[in-house]
Each structure stands twice: as C-alpha cells, then as structure tokens.
Amino acid sequence: MSRAPYLTSRLQGFGTTVFAEMSALAVATGSVNLGQGFPDYPGPTEVLEVARAAIGTAADQYPPGPGIPELREAVAAHHQRFRGLEYDPDAEVLVTAGATEALSGALLALLDTGDEVVLFEPMYDCYAAGIAMAGGVARPVPLHPPDGGNGGTGGGDAGEGGRWTFDPDELRAAITPRTKILLLNTPHNPTGKVFTPHELALLAGHAIEHDLLVLTDEVYEHLVFTGARHTSIATLPGMRERTLVVGSAGKTFNVTGWKIGWICGPAPLVAAVRTAKQFLTYVNGGPFQPAIAAGLRLPESYFEAVAKDLEYRRDVLVRGLREGGLPVISPEATYFATVDVRSVQPDGDGLAFCRSLPARAGVVAVPTGVFYDPAHAHLGRHLVRFAFCKSDDVLGEAVQRLVGMGRAGGGRS
Ligand SMILES: *Cc1c(COP(=O)(O)O)cnc(C)c1O
Image (cartoon, rainbow, N blue to C red; front, side):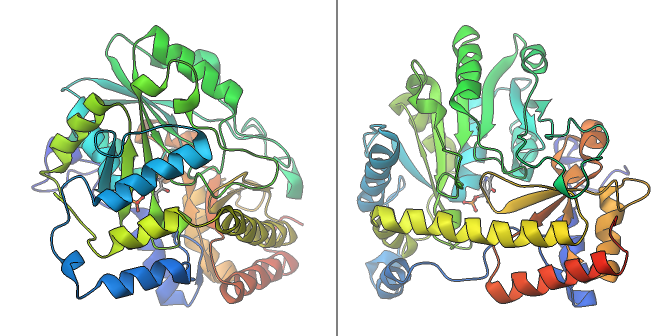
C-alpha cells in the first residue's frame, strides 16, 4: 500500500474505506445499496417528538459534560431492567458522541504506547483505528465461519444453523504480558454472532487470570433474533469491576445520525474515560439526550418489536440470497448477513465480487475482508456483507434482483 501524504505513521493504512467506493458505485449504477448499515425507516414517534420539542429550548446549549442527569438515570435504569446490572448514574455512567467516542475515548484514556488490545476479527472498522490513534497495538483473533472456511461446498445452505466460533488456543496465544484490554463486540458486526455465556466465561477467565480490562461494545444488544440471547460479560462473576460496557441509541432507535452513546463501568474507569472524552467532543446532541432518555424507558414491547421486525427483514434477505444462488450464513443478530462467494466468483475474491455485483444484479454489498487486519485479510477474502435494515420496498427490490441474477445463471445453480 502506498504512503498517504501528510498522514502520521500511526494512521497509515486507514486512509480510504471501501464503503465510500461502494456507495458511490450504488449511486452511479442505480443499484440498491445494501452496503451501509443504517436503517432507512424512522425511529419511534415517542422518541422523535421529544427531540422536536426540545429544539428551541435550553436543550440547544451545552449539556453537562457527563450528559444530562435524566439520560444518565435512564441508561442506568435500562441496564438494571435488561441486564440486572447496577450503575450509579453520577459516577458510573458517561454519555458520549455515539459508541464511537465511547470506544475511542476509552482506548485513549486506558492505553499507553505499546499496550496491546486483544479483539476478534473481522472487526468493526473503528477499533483498529482507535487503537492506533491511542498508540496501542491490536492483536486480532480470528472468528471462524460455520463451514470452517474450507470449501463453500454447502451450496445454498452453507453455514445454515452453524455459528461463527473461535479457537481457544488462538485466543490464548494472542494474550501477552503487554495485553491491557480485551475488546469485545457482542452481538457482533459484521458476522451477526452472539457470544454465548460459555464463550464469555472463557473470555472472563482470561481477563481475570491476566488482569485485563474488558471493553465491550453492545450496540446491537436489542437486535437479537429467535434462538439467541444477549449476555453482557459484565454480568459474569468478577467481571463488573473490570468491564466498561458501551451502548448506543443509533441502532436501537433507528437514529444512527444522532450519535448518542454511553459507557458504563466502575467509577475510576469511567472517570478515566471522561478525562479523554471532555477534550474530544466535550458534549454533543443536546436536544437528542432527553429524547433517548424517553426511548430507554419505553416498555418491553418496543424492544421486542424492534428485534422481531429486523428478524423478519433478515429472513426476507436470507431467503432472497439463497434463491439467488448465494450461500449465506444467517446471522443471530444485528443488521448483517454474510455470503460466501466462492461458488459464484471464480477467484473467490469478495472485493471483485462486490465490484461486479452492481452490473450482475444491481445490488451493492461490502467485502468482509475490509474488517480484518490487513495482514489477515485473506481469512475473510471470500466473504461479503449484506445489510437488511432496509424498508420493505428497498429490500423487496434487492431480493427480486438477486433472485433474477440466480435465474440468469449468474448464481451457482
Ligand atoms: C454502528 C456501530 C458502532 C457505532 O455506533 P455510534 O453510536 O454510531 O457511534 C459501534 N460499534 C458497532 C459494532 C457498530 O456496528
């Protein structure tokens, strides 16, 4: 890769993202964009109306640095209601500019130069950059797709019923005396994996044995489908005191542009993150903070409905991909399904497949390879991520085009 001018050595390699290329391709070709993971339908009226009413009031000015008390109390009550976790709204809850600032604030606050972070890959794109900006070193451990990544012979059923897994030996090998943080994401983007209590117990055992801090990104906590259940590692014995839990309103309330997130944990850890956060954005989203406080207090039925609705969209896309001849790994949670392209793309290259898909089917997806450390990108080279958090019209059109591609022989069958 060529060196980007002006950019520090810390940020070399983070210059351009494939998301921009694919979104531009979608516009240029009139394709349905299933590349980017944001919903194209609005959030709950109860939430939107609070924000509308707050504009033009004192809520337009700087909120308190840690977030308005009402929102911090709602975040604490939400953790209590859904996870049985107690946090003091004053000392143990910090409102941030999205989960992104919670994560980068935590990494900047907690990492010294050369400190290592163990995390799973494929990984959400801000992790590696956040670690690099903090002067840390990422130690990725691969998640293995259900077919073992060795053939894609499952046809339309590849990975059906199977789960992404990790090798406990590979995890153990990634932990060194320099490891400071275990960075976890469950439910997981881009795989849609939900870590099981058994897997979390294994991770917790390592965290305790090696005295690691745990930073857990749970922004998809409510977008979990039948058969899976979200567990926060903070609820495991001995873990609350070493864990920072990151959440966000964006995915739960269909307001990804509002950038209201939070981070919860023991007071000294949250105080450290607050120190970094106050010099990043200081505060954000004044009128959105009371709206998300209202959202977090919505009845159980809202949270159940949002998961059910997305599960239906997952089923529509997964069925369409299969009918289009694309072997798909059906996710347990999140916005994303993964396709193994080896049976429909002779060189097995997910990036080449994504570049050709607009012409083949009029649909845009993103190659999963971009979610890996460049040194390990071969592990995800044959995988492609499709988002299904789209309205009926958009999803229906995408599915029709994908099925048409299968019939036209563009698919494997
Ligand atoms: C979308 C996403 C985020 C970013 O959340 P914001 O609140 O928009 O900053 C963080 N982590 C994961 C895994 C995501 O998919």
